[in-house]
Length: 240
Image (cartoon, rainbow, N blue to C red; front, top):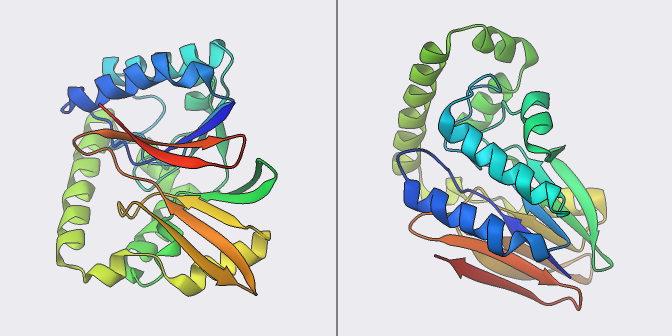
């Protein structure tokens, strides 16, 4: 049996080709897996569980179908879909995970994260994150109409894109000291995350032991899945 990991799909109605790849993946690959983990930014923007657009419903139904076929699907909130809550969980059948979640992947303690909190040099984003994750701020936002929320989300995306274009490249990547800190905190030998859009496998020493950090690929022109086999092998596979 294999365990599958994906992140940073940024699904939206304006990119139907990427959504089609996702639906195909759920239909063909996911049912044979032991579990599927989605490590954040499934959607380009999620403005609340009450946004029952046809597009959102199509994704939710595809996820529920996967779960009903026997493959558990675990979801971790990203910086684009942090407003996902119990409504999404009930409708999709996915299990929402905390921001830092340790699993034992083929006997190896493996830490799962979206990855945004690892970028400690991006102080502007972290200030926004702290505010956006505040319960009262979220409730105030959710009281607004869907149209108002869509407009605010669009404005936030433009601001995020502008920040990404103008920030120094090293600011947008993880800070190694934070990676080490969080892996030691959870006694993890392997860290899997997304967010940075810089797919790679990094092997390094931590307190005298060899450890690994795997960065998942974003779904831009094609899809990507990390496949971890029961014998310990892992492979990043392109989906199209």
